[in-house]
Amino acid sequence: MSEHRHIIAILRGITPPETINICEALLMAGIAMIEVPLNSPDALKSIRDAAKALAGRATIGAGTVLSADEVDKVADAGGAFVVSPDTNTDVIARTIGRKMRSYPGVFSPTDAFGALRSGATGLKFFPAEVLGPKGIRAMKAVLPPDIPLYAVGGANPDNFREYFAAGCAGFGLGTYLYKPGMTLDEISTRARTAVAAYDEEKGK
Image (cartoon, rainbow, N blue to C red):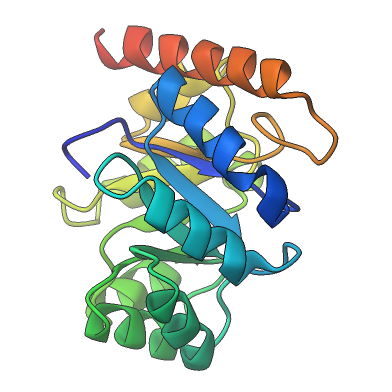
C-alpha cells in the first residue's frame, strides 16, 4: 500500500468490455488500487482481465465480498485484495489465508477490533458519511496507530481534508469516480481531480 496513493476506485456496475480502458485511465490519473464489486456484471471476468492487463502497474481486487467461497473465486481470478461491507471473520481469515489484503467494513469499535483480531490489513469505515470525521476520530484514538483507515461512502475531494484530519489514510471512491454510462473523459477528469485534492491535502 505504501507504494502508491491510498485511493481505491470502486467500479460498481462495470462490465468486462469497458474494464481495461477505464482501469488504464484511472492508472494514468494516478489511482493504482482498483476494486470491482462482485455484484457487478461478470465481475470475476473483469477482475481476471484487469489483473492480467495491469500486472505490475495496478492492484486489482474485489468488493462486496460476502463469503469465504467468494474470496476463493477472487483469488483464483488474480485479485490481490478483498473489500467487504461488513466485518465477516470468515471472509477476513480466508482472505489472509489466500495471501490477499483484507479491508472489511466497520462502523463501531466492536467491528473494528473484531476485524483486527481476525487479521484485517486495514479498516473501511462505511458508511463514512453517517459516521462522519468526528466518529472516525473518536475510534482512531483507541485503534492501533499503524492500521490504515479508509473513509468510504460519502468521501470526495471536497471533504478529504476533514477525513485526513480525523486520522484516515485514504478513501474509497465509488459514484464520484464511476457510474455506469459515464464517458472515459469524465472518469479521467474526476480521477485527476481526486488525485490532485489527495496530494494537496496529504502534503499539508
